[in-house]
Image (cartoon, rainbow, N blue to C red; front, side):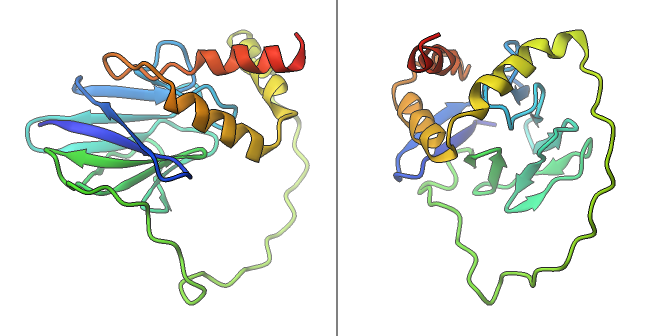
Length: 188
């Protein structure tokens, strides 16, 4: 099975990432196969697995969830993928391309006003004690703090520019340069 993830950007450009291994981990950690160092993306966000017949998506208990065709994937459950399925991880949307299908990649359809569900009042959440950070979360907390002061639009634009300039080999998405650019822009 020849599988790719096609990243869709807001300006309409696309970037293809081959999925050469039977199991690919997407997330923020340095050892992920496709690395996306954004605070909204969990360290080990989701997993794609493929064999000769099928391709499956599994959310690995991510904080913000993994979405398949605008529906949140239940954590730790394998969901079969079809060519043309849309996978959303944080602000990024990918199209699943299997054996060259779909040949033409299009952005996901927009919800019309008639399709949008009616807003329901949500109960106020009960105050909770903040979780005690684990030692391996120090780096994540530092990255979250650094990126939290940047407006979403500025981060999206910067991310889009960085993705256009990426030199990706073996499907390893390395956005570490984005971290360095952010430090430079803050004068750190």
